[in-house]
Amino acid sequence: MQIFVLKDIRRIKQNKNKMKINSNYKLRSIAGETIVVNQGTTGTDMTRIISLNASAKLLYEQLLDKEFTLEDAAKVLVDTYDIGGEQALEDAEKWADALRKCGVIR
Image (cartoon, rainbow, N blue to C red; front, side, top):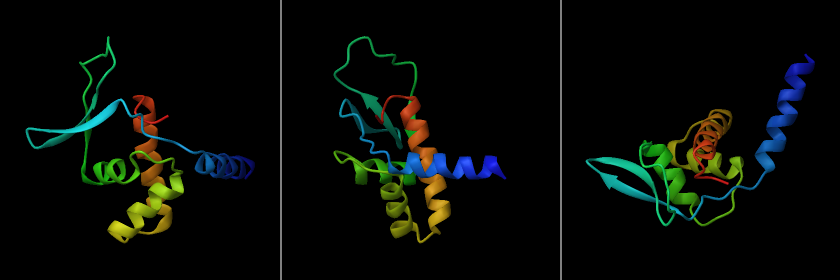
């Protein structure tokens, strides 16, 4: 039971952290795919491609140039796809984690 409580507390803390999409990254459409490209940084590893599905692209576009929390991202998903808040929060967390690992979100 303690692990569950600690996990929930950690998740609540993470949800309150403000994030922002790194302005060096831009969306591009190539061959019908939406990808994220790092512009303006020399020595960038161009062997990795970050491809976004429709919901990931929506979040990127809606939250670009804003400070946001996971709740803000989840609200975009709830409002657009009419899904439950818990599912939207899980999806937003996966999206943010993936982009954070690539340096797109800071």
